[in-house]
Each structure stands twice: as C-alpha cells, then as structure tokens.
Length: 167
Image 1 (cartoon, rainbow, N blue to C red):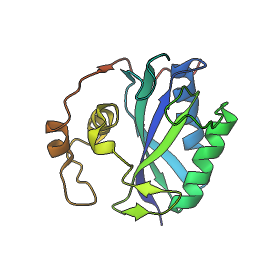
Image 2: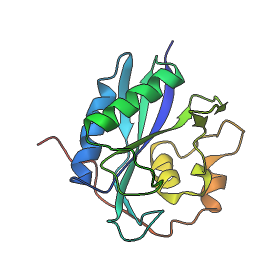
Image 3: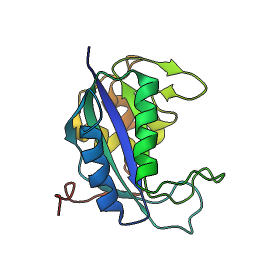
Image 4: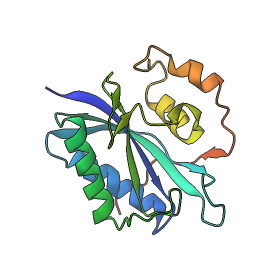
C-alpha cells in the first residue's frame, strides 16, 4: 500500500540547485517510490549561524510503499551519497538535508523521527513550498495549511525558478 509523503529539501553547499535536483531524482529512484511533484526553489537565510551561505529549499511530494523509518534510512543514504557529513553543529552548512515533513496523515513521535516535522509550522521555507504543491492541505491534527500560512509571514524567503533540469 502506498502513501503520499512530503519531503523537505535544503542545501547551501556544493552547488545547492544541483544538489536539490539530484535529490529529487534520487527520491524517484527509491524502492516502491515515485516522485509526484516538486516545488520551485526558495532562497532563505540560514537558521543557525549567519556566517554561512543562504539555503535553497524545496518540497517534494512522493508516493511510497516504504514505512516511515525505512524511508528515513533511505533519505539519510541519499544525503550521505551527496556528500552530507553530520556534525555536532545542529544548523551548520550542509550539502543536502532531507526531512520527512508529512507521512500520510500520521503523527509519529519516536527517538529518530517526528512527523509532522518539528517546527515546520513556523518555517516559511517549508510552508510556502508545501502550499505551492497542495494549498488546501489539512495537517494531521486537522489544522488547515492556510491557517499556518497566515501565522507565518514569508519573511526571509524568496521564490526562485523551477527546479533546474538535468544537464
């Protein structure tokens, strides 16, 4: 059985637009998974230390038969394959960050995974690309995405071009 899942993508190193394009291609290649759509790119200031480049962010919609934790494992393998090195610094620069934002209408709270993604309700670089894909989305707790958008102004983000084509 397949479910719809939203994945947040972010990068601020090693040609970020290319990193996000390659990540979308990799999502489409996961077992039992297909990429349904991907938002355009958004530029945002880093959340942590400001002495790093701006981020490029996007949201992908996939349909997958993978359960949440195996999906998380696959996302972390994609990150590693694209040069991600996990460091102690929580919000430092990275080549690729992939987060499960929503997994069907499930609410998950384990040591390894929290869905809906922690603090996504306050992150314009997550909410606005998500709304681009599904403006009438209802969160697992019943909150309309449009209600979250009204409380989270698009401050500090800039919508850019569509995801770059392979090239």
